[in-house]
Image (cartoon, rainbow, N blue to C red; front, side, top):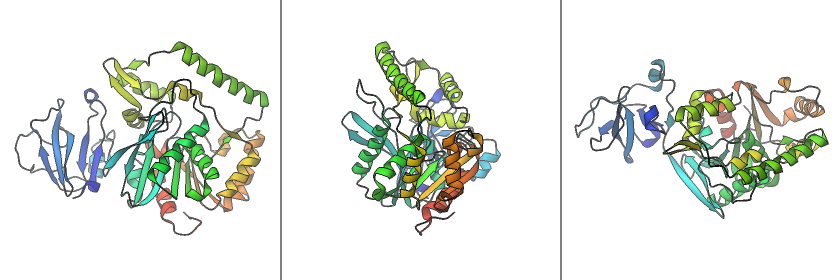
Length: 400
């Protein structure tokens, strides 16, 4: 059994029972590590695979009997994933296979990322949403084709990436620049882009600017751009608010607030009504740091005042035509962008809807699925098959 056959759960803090857990898809040898410290109810262990032993922290009550023997345990984790789920272990966060952490140097620090799959596989760059982080893809990527190389990055000021220098704001094009820096560091010449929410807008803009570098574009709960406000005064007001909030944050110089793990999760769920508790916990693993006073969110508060790049409908349609044969758009029925739930009186919404229902539907695969804005994290199996088919299709127009 190799490392790619393991299901791992990444932990955050031990006192809430969210320690690193592993489960096996089949039978394998598991070794307790008697000298390794472990919280009550957990056992330090190592999994024996073809690539060597991997240190793990296993939930005692679910997986391993406490033991101090030096040989392999006679009872492995044996049962399949469906067996564990049938026992009501729905809160467990499993990740198929091993992944690696990456850091890309930038002038103000580094951009962090995590990668799955063989580095020689076809590259797929995954971009998270606003104020989220790379963990948003933790449950989806294990369900996608294994012969691809998936890299999920943290935008600057998010997750484990460095904050931008003092006095800087977070312009939309800065996120696009983050992508270009990471791609240059990876030395990718042509790759697939997948983005959720704001990450989809960043992916779309990158594809518009560097169409020769992107072979396919996957947009989750995003249309690839941000529509400009119809009201000019509203547009001006939004720019003024952005500047005033940035200056206010600099003037206050507040110390980041520390919260208990429960309070940090609750605050995150209150701000993201489409997130499940499990999804929120997954994002917190990379989105907060434990301090003596409690958990502190990693994100830069200035990222809340991002300076967005807007387009008119006419510009959007022209840009979409540039990448018309390589786009998959997935919208959730209870998400944020389903046309029937938007303001039908809007000229922009009407124009886009008419475009998709007529000309553009012949060139862009627009799929509606059950779920919410975070369907890829809450219920990844709903979208994984659609994405997998799109990735593996050989023809120019990847059909579902």
